[in-house]
Structures are given as structure tokens and as C-alpha cells.
Amino acid sequence: MSFFAAEALSLSFGGVHAVRDVSFAVEEGEVFSIIGPNGAGKTTLFNLISRFYDPDAGAIKFGGEDITRLAAHRIAAKGIARTFQNTELFAHETVLANLLIGCHAHRRTHLLEELLFLPRARRQDLAFRERVEAVIDLLHLQGYREQTISALPYGARKMVEVARALCVAPTLLLLDEPSSGLNPEETEDLSFWIEDINEDLGVTIIMVEHDMNLVSQASHRVLAMADGEVLAVGEPAAIQSHPDVLRAYLGD
Amino acid sequence: MRFVLKTRYGQDIDLFRHNGQRFWYALLLVALLAAPWVLGDFYVGEVSLVFIYAIAGIGLMLLVGYTGLVSLGHAAFLAIGAYAHAWLLNHGWPFPASLAAAAAFTATVGALVGIPALRMTGIYLAVATLAFAEIVEQVITRWESVTGGYRGMAVPPAELFSVSLLDVDVFYYVCLAVLVACLIAALNLLRSPSGRAMVAVRDSEVAAQSMGINLARTKTLAFAVSAGFTGIAGGLLAHKIGYLAPDAFTIVLSIQLLLMVVVGGLGSMHGVIYGAIFIGLLPQGIALVRDAAPPAVAQIPGLEPGIFGAILILFLIYEPLGIHGRWVKVRQFFTEFPLYRKATHRRQRSYLRTERVR
Image 1 (cartoon, rainbow over the protein chains, first blue to last red):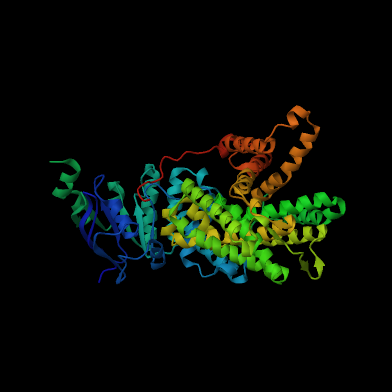
Image 2: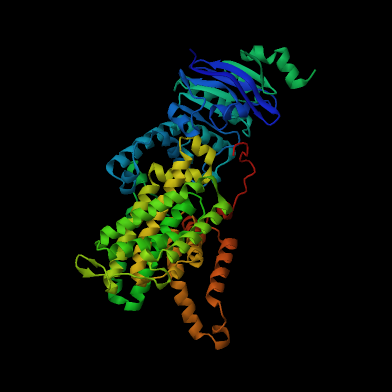
């Protein structure tokens, strides 16, 4: 029984088979990367896992539970959090507010308690804040805490998005191209942070990534996709020299 | 420049950030409490109307400014609150119970409107709410056994702790108390998960969902809470105008309410108050100017709506964040002087937001 498994997932948009019969399994504690040329179906696969799309066929299992038909907003409570390729932050809010929204899945108060802000609502907010501060400490975001997202540089926004996902307190973290738009230094920092998140917090990570340096530094196993199909799964070095992968990237 | 030393996380949760704010808001409250002794009856009545607009504005602001759902039909919620309150008073309910029940009823209607509105945003939602307001107006006109149709419906004189609300000063204090209570409730909501969920839905629906926010629930809740506040305002407005007729709650009123939150400043509760002052007192201002102006100008028909429209357009072009937005910039200029950067508030265009999931 693996920690996370996609079983024969398929999804087509009209005549385009975005994802075709994709199966893979991720073990607990792994950093698992998905690579592939543009249009290979990586982000579609992510959107299937985070339940924005319904698969035409196949199943998604997480922690022994079938989550194939779960509503998108119930995924966070199961312990799956994600980031987005081009950042989807709450742009008019401060970093702190963004991270507090990340705690939403752990909300226990009801509307009346919130309208009157009864002691339980305050205690809950304090508990959220402590969780947020732990994440801020982990990712060194102290300097950005009170700033609005629209005032942040792009690299910082990417990290805030990772931080927000961590506030969900996930056991499985999905990172959609975490290094896109980052400079080489920021990318290097990112690989250390991925290691920290994975080893210190024990979070299993699945990431879509184009930067092969980051992939081979950070990940334990790699899955290569092209045209919606799985080409190969294996160690980063083996995938990089796999003939099918080379053909997908470079042509014959 | 003030630097607030934070030693507890509670300081970020409290409604007031520092004692300076507590002092100024207390002073404002004292001034408002003393106002009836200073102002004449007419102006006390006008300020009560500003309070009522502000209560409705809180409701509309939660929906438009915080959840990002536009409503062109809020006059309907005002009407529902007013008629429900008057009807209950006519059936012998005491004032507080009647007002609360009217608010609850309006909130329920709001939730029902919210459900079909879930799939709509932007202009489509505006049109749908406009249609809803039209339906409500028709229902009020035809349902004569309850509403009195075109003949209208008298609002019975109400009492609170055996003091008549017909007294201008008493009504003023009641409106002030209700406004303060509504403001605190709204601010409480905004510092809790439900309020933050609204903001999340406004800024990014996909991200909100993957943070565990139920879009349908949040939007329905936003409509219900918004309608509830507006219903309370409707109940108070019923006392203010004394006699309810369908033509008091037309599209023009809906537009005025929307104008209020836009001119005041979307996304802030300060904006609601500024907007209410603007909407409530501008007609008086225009009337004063009209009296002083030469007859050729003063007798132009449609002067008042024309000026309203012109002001709205000017705000949309030069200060989309409204009066509050302007105030924030001015304050920032002085607190950061001489380090203020002009670009801080420049509107940014985002080319990068993903369109892959909709």
C-alpha cells in the first residue's frame, strides 16, 4: 500500500488526450519530480490530483483512501496542499493574512462565534498565528510579514506561496514549477528548503519542475512524461540518460 | 512616524492597533454622543440617515469589497428588511425582536439569492441581482394583503424601553448603537476564518479552494450576511421614512448604495463610513449650492443625479480606491516623508496569473 498512488488516470479535452493511462506511486517521505516537455500533461496531472479536474478514468488513492471524487476544497483537510505555477496569492492582502488563510482547513469555529469574536475564536487565531510563525521562521520570511503581496518581488511571492501551502500542515505537498521565474541563487535556496521541508517536517513532495539541476539535487525519484503518457520512472540520473526521455526532449 | 512594538500575537488580533487609535475613536464616539445637543433636529435626522446608509454599506461592502461579488439589487434587501420590520411591528412584535427577525428573514432571502448567483461573477451577477431587485419590487407592488401595494404601508410608531422612537434624538442614539454593533460584528467577521475566506475567494478562487475553502458556502454566506446587515438598515429606514411605498426602493437606490462603497473605498470599513457621509450629505450640499447659485444653473433638471454620476466617474478614473484610498496615501506621504515612493500605490498589471484552471 503506497502513500499516494495514481492508477490509470486519463483525461481528455475533446480530441486532446492531456493525460493518458498515467499510473505511479509515491512512498511516504519521498521527493518525487515530474518532468516533461511543454504540453506533456504535468499541470493537468496536478489539477487532477488537487481535484480541479475530474478524470475520465482511473483512481487517485491517498493514505489508503480513494480521493478520486472528493470536492476540491476537501483536499486540504486530507493533508494535501499545493502551489501554482504562476502564483495564485491573495494579492491585496499582507503575507501574514495570506498565511492565515492557509490555516483555513483547520477552522473549528462557527459563524456566531466569529461575529461576536468569542474567546474560542481568539484562541483559534492565536493557534493559527503560532503555526504561521513557525512557517515564517522555517522559510525566513520575517522581513516580509507585514507587506502586501503586490509589493513583493516575484521570488519572494513564490516562497510565500510555498509557505501558505505549508500552513495547511500537509503530509503531501504539490509544487508546480517552484523554480520558474527564480534566479539561480533563489533556485539554490529553494533546493535547500525543499530538503528542509522534506526531512525536518517529514512532508512528502511531488513537484513539477523544468530545472534539471534542481530535480537531480532535490528529488529521490523522477517521472518523465510526454504527450500525456508516462515515459519512465526512476532515479534522476537514470532518467536523464533514458533514451525515450532524450527522444521526447530532443527529437530523433 | 509611529512604531508599534509588538510583544504579543494578540496585538495583531485586537481591533485597535495602539492606544492612539483607542483615544481617537473614543473621542469620536463622545463627539457623536454629544452631537444631538449641538445640532438642530433637522441635522440630527440627517446624521441618523447617514448611520442607516452606513449599516447598509457594511453589508454591501462585505459582498462587493471583500468577496468581490457585485450587487445592483441591494435596494431590494433594504425593502425586504423595511417591509418585514413594519409588518412584524404591525403584528405587535416589540422593536428589538422585530428588527432582529427582519434581519434574519432578509439574510435568508439573501442566501437564497446567493445560491443561483454561485455560478456568476462580474457583470452577469450584477444583471442577475438587478433582475432580483425588479422581482422584489413587483412582489411588493402586487402582494397587497401584506404590503399594501401602491397604497403603501404605514410604519407603526415603535418604542424601545418605553421611549418612543419618534423622538429624533432617541432615534439617533438607536441608529448609532446599531451601527456600532454592526461595525464590530463585521470587523470580527473579517478577522476570523469566514471573513478571510471571503477575501480569498475575491482574490483567487483556485487558491481558495486548495486552501480548503468551500466556494459555494463562502459565497452564500457572503450574500446572507450582506443581506442581513442591509435588512437591519431597512428596518431602521422604515422608521426614518415613516410610510413604505414600492417607489422608495428602486434601482436608483441600489446604484446609490453601490456608489457609496465605491466612492468610500472598496475593501475597507472606513470606506463605508466615508461613503455614507458622502451619499447622505451630498444632496444637502447640492441643495445649499443650488440655493446660492444663479437661477439659470439652479433650475437645470437632473442636476443632482448628474453631479452624482460625474463624481463617480472622477473617482473611478483618478482614485479607484475611493476616499479611504486617498486618505491612506496622504497619511503614508506624511509618515514616510521624505522617503515616500510614488510607485508604492501604482496599479500593477499582472501578466502572470494562470488561466489554466477556471
